[in-house]
Length: 339
Image (cartoon, helix red, strand yellow):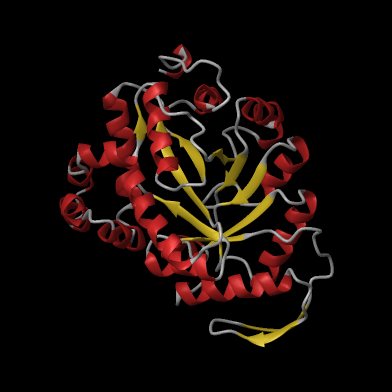
């Protein structure tokens, strides 16, 4: 069996379920299990920085990354301040991941116009990088202008800046101007596709990070039901749909897209192919899950952020620990309280 470490960094999606103030012991257990990264998310729950600030204080073994901070919902100056603060709290252990997010999050939920997402992401990347150098910022970008801002508190170590990328243009931005790329909704073969773009554009080592969905069960009915709900929620969003077209899945997903557009949610769920679920979700026994995660690393991923689905919230830490690369013996089955 492929080594569960396979040359890459094991991480998990933060925050874990449950009240934030109770997570200290769980973070310690995950670090003991071999996890070295915690990657936050920011959609409709916790913000991207708060849980990582707690982790910075509680568990010095963890590297901390935002995956990702939307570039529209905070001003560029506030993003720079937040990044500088967390980098100051965890010197050399913080990575800033930024991304365009989606029209739903930015416009429908936050009341902010979602215009020119590529330009906004590029400009925020450039601004934050310069601001973290201590420069006085007084210039106009394509998507905003800044006059006279300067960070008065600089971190000892400026954080790398990664770009959330669904398609080639954003991948190129993350490689050409950033320190790497954060992926979402990718299979191992998709990682190989992105890796080739990275290698063709840079001889330097670049981070290639992905959130990977794990259903810790051998019950295929649970896997299918869980995956179908998530796929129909996300892959009907235009940016995600276009990314799947780029990866060659238009034929597989068109029946689902058509049913969703017609307002038939039940038919959309039914038309998600089982083959797509098997391709894009990690599931099965702990050994099978570990092998699939290893494929991501073998195809070029430098770090993975595991997101556990389909189990009770209180079971998420146990599922992660079972998959941890420091497990002395790979379990043949999941703990009874998971299934």
